[in-house]
Image (cartoon, rainbow, N blue to C red; front, top):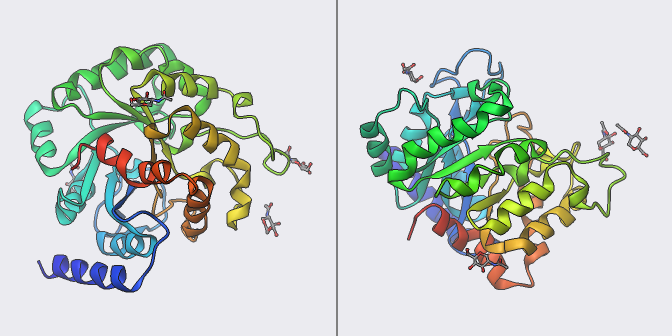
Length: 309
Ligand SMILES: *[C@@H]1O[C@H](CO)[C@@H](O)[C@H](O)[C@H]1NC(C)=O
Ligand SMILES: *[C@@H]1O[C@H](CO)[C@@H](O)[C@H](O)[C@H]1NC(C)=O
Ligand SMILES: *[C@@H]1O[C@H](CO)[C@@H](O)[C@H](O)[C@H]1NC(C)=O
Ligand SMILES: *[C@@H]1O[C@H](CO)[C@@H](O)[C@H](O)[C@H]1NC(C)=O
């Protein structure tokens, strides 16, 4: 309780003194609560000590201007959602949503309903990080795996979130429209860019898998997170270094801006010293002339995707 009141007080103070470029009521649709000193991580998922608690996240979010958060189950906690669920409970369902991970063979409907009541609204299928069991699914078994997850979460209307390399998006392209559920794809679809020093003026359709992502976005049930640019481009130190991604982001916004949500990927695992503020501000400038697009990307679309008021 004391911690909760403290968090509320601090965020109130920061909101009063700070000024943000982001729309009032913005959502960070992708962050992780990781505290390796308090919650044990699954073996072989990294050795760095990471300290990204609710308290620290609150300070970060208020400095950026986000009042709502979506806590995403990180790779290093596998199917043990304890840290994510405790963080969700600390934030409360008015300010937060969460996306969990589970084994579709063993999960019970009662557990899913319990999590739903806490504010969970999605399951993450991790096909991109080899430390995660589902990442090693042979390509021909991926549609079957996806259907299994969809059958579990369909009664609750949850979102299926994919962490998947862009080159692999064609593997899910046929199954996604058959699920009868909404899907969100992490981190701009995790494109592998050509040599970043030479690709200003990038044609996104030249990247393997981008056309599949574009078709899914046009189809209407797929959303994409505008997040973690540093995972697509290397050695980014200033906001202008991210310029290389602008054509890709603008194309996603052009295809359907209402299907995009902003995320920080805090605490930026593997890039812990990174400051995401310059990129967030770059993004504001990129869409800033269009108030509706801006409000959608940072707030309104998230409310729809995550089933919030
Ligand atoms: C999940 O993680 C928590 C926190 O580290 C731990 O107490 C619990 O035993 C874990 N549960 C399982 C089933 O491993
Ligand atoms: C990227 O481009 C630069 C400049 O043309 C070149 O020096 C470098 O070797 C290239 N790197 C790769 C991995 O192709
Ligand atoms: C990264 O960028 C900095 C600043 O522009 C530069 O000094 C450094 O050499 C770059 N590192 C690599 C690995 O490209
Ligand atoms: C974008 O998606 C919304 C909601 O599904 C839809 O109403 C709208 O027509 C779409 N816009 C375009 C340009 O396809």
